[in-house]
Length: 218
Image (cartoon, rainbow, N blue to C red; front, side, top):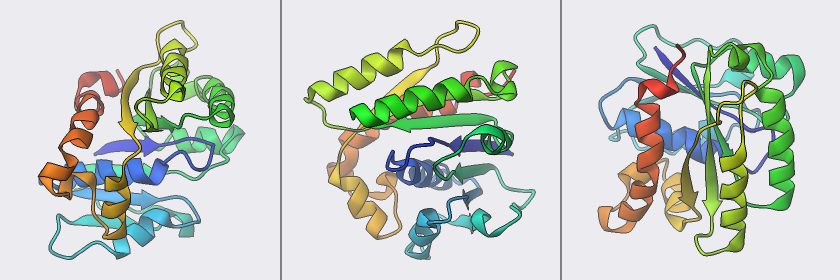
C-alpha cells in the first residue's frame, strides 16, 4: 500500500485541496484509494459527502474520530493532516507515510511559518534516516505576482539535514477551477477539459515525482 501525507503546520496552506486532488488522480486511474481525514475540521470528509456516486470511488476514513482503519487491498492511502503539528505529535504523524508533500502559499507569514516547520520536520528521525521522502509545492500562486518568485526562491533554497536539496517539485496557481470542483466533491482531473487543461499541466511535475522512485524510501 502506498501512503502519501499532505502536511503543513500552518492552516490555510491548501492541504485539503492537494490531498483530495491527489486522491482523485489515482482513483480516476482505477486505483483503490482511501482518503484519511485527520483534521477535526473534517474538510476532506465534507468534500467526500458531496462526491457523486457515479464518479471514481474514494473511500473516506474519518481519522480524527479515532483509530485509522484502511482496507488491506487499498492501493493508495492519502492522509490530509491537521495544522499545528509539532514535537511528538509531528513525529507520530510522519510515521504514517512513505511520502510527504508540503504545500506552501506565498505570503510572508506563511514563509516564516514554513521555514520553522520544515526545519523541525527534516530533523525527525524518519526523514533523517531517509525512511520517508519529502517534497514541497508552491500552492495558490498568482502567476505574475512578485510573491511567486519569492516563494519559489525560498522553496528552491531548502536543504535536508545532510545537505541534500529538499525537492521543490511544482507550483500550482490560484484558480477558481479548484473551488468549482470542490463544491461538487470533484477534483481538477474531473473538470471540463477545455477549462482545466492548464492546471493539469502544472500538476504534471508533482505527479511525475509521486510516480517515481525518487518519492519512495530507499
